[in-house]
Length: 263
Image 1 (cartoon, rainbow, N blue to C red):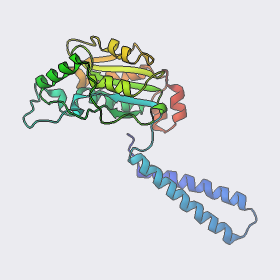
Image 2: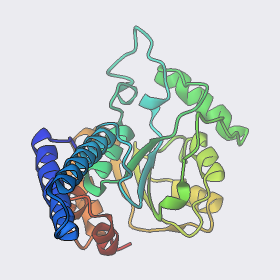
Image 3: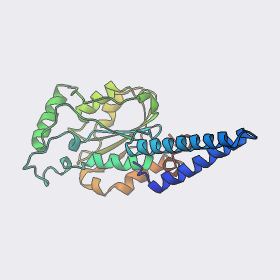
Image 4: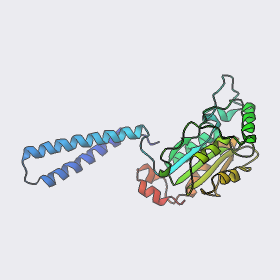
């Protein structure tokens, strides 16, 4: 998320005010001095209000970052930590989790909007207990209930979708997400954190549930123990699909950014 700089706000205010004053003077022509002064005061106040509103929107994350959605399922976002959770045997449940961290780096590189896939009934923070429940859900072909859906899904034409490998497939909440949020026609890029099983059957499962999504075969995956040191690798993977660096996104030019994405 962009950190709004007060100096940047002041500069925007000055530029906007100057442009407004110039427009007033051009239109006013030979009108009275008092009327012109009142007009200038009015547009200056309007410019200040618009700048302040804009900065507040950025600070609150209200401004959309364009056509990229970064959705992910992470155990760390879906478990209530026990007081005695073992950081050695269950490291990925302690924030930031493996997939959560990868998703943050994808968001940083794309300027897209983050969406955490969260269940209404959290998983155990003990790894063995979590695996038992995940295996039960897999056996029942369950669709765990989610906290929320993506708002304004039609605004996105590119989706980065992150997940861990659970039982040689995907967490069942990921399938709930795919069935509740239609990705038909959207470019989808997958990234995965896993153990020795690699991607296993996860890509096939996702493709079966979202047959009309345009799922790229350019997939990023890493071993779970390597996730915390994979920032450069995953951001290079994102950059491979982008003709132009993220500067356009940082400048807030959605039109330029969308034109340069090579999806």
